[in-house]
Image 1 (cartoon, rainbow, N blue to C red):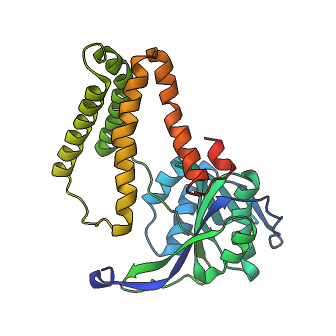
Image 2 (cartoon, rainbow, N blue to C red; image 1 turned 180 degrees about the horizontal axis):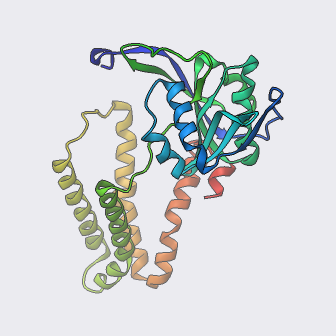
Amino acid sequence: MCESLGFTQIGKMHQHQGAAFQPPLVSLPPGERLRPIGVKDTPWLIALASRATRLDRATLLPQLLDVSSGIALDRDGELIGFVLFRRFGHGHVIGPVVAPESANQSRAKALISYWLALNAGVFVRIDTPERFGLSAWLERLGLPQVECIAQMAPNGPAPSDEKLSQFALANQGVWRFSMHARLAVFIALLAAALFGAATPVAKVLLGVMSPFMLAGLFYLGSGVGLGAGLLLRPPSGQRLHRAEIPWLLGALVAGGVAGPARLMLGLSSTPVATSFLLLNLEGVLTAVIAWVVFKENVNTWVFRW
């Protein structure tokens, strides 16, 4: 589809993520050092990022700087490279990484190592073009490659700057608190409030109807809400595979029939505060089942959140 829109593959991008080990010290050429980025560096950073990508970064980079920490590569007072580090989701992103190419790419490695050394054991993601050969080095540091995707560009690759390259992408979108974002936050808060109100409301209603009737009404409401959502936002067209049907049926029976019924039975004979606290174990036990039964990847980063 991308090719039909005028895009061509210009290379491959390796996605690395994980909790890195303490990296070894990477030496820089004489006269070069790492230093914190200052406010007065912004025009130089924009110029470097624009040169490295052959794209105008006058709008993107200031937005990234607002939400990132940065380190500059300085040579005798001249800014020649930089790296940004910012929080995203439950982890952090390293990028962009802009520096002159060098033997063994020591400058890029020094910039990346700076943030890995300060955040050893923390979940980090970095996306780097295959052509720079950083993947083997990143894997030795505890950041395995988890994906390889085609790097596409309109009208082929842009003319490169022989003296400057971008070794890692800016990656991920910059959060803008727009009207769309405000609506998303409102919906999430409303869902949390309704979920929290469900238990005390159910306790009151159990005085006038049976637990099984109440469980059915609760999930009837859930179905009506889901149906309305599907009408407003049609499905993407992905189909359910035959091998997934038993899992879906199991989820329906356990989560849509047995679970709600047993919840209401327990609520009918338990104080509402106790039931509400026990209900908070749902997320914890779900994670434990995913870990123990389905062998989902779990590391120390999970327990920090």
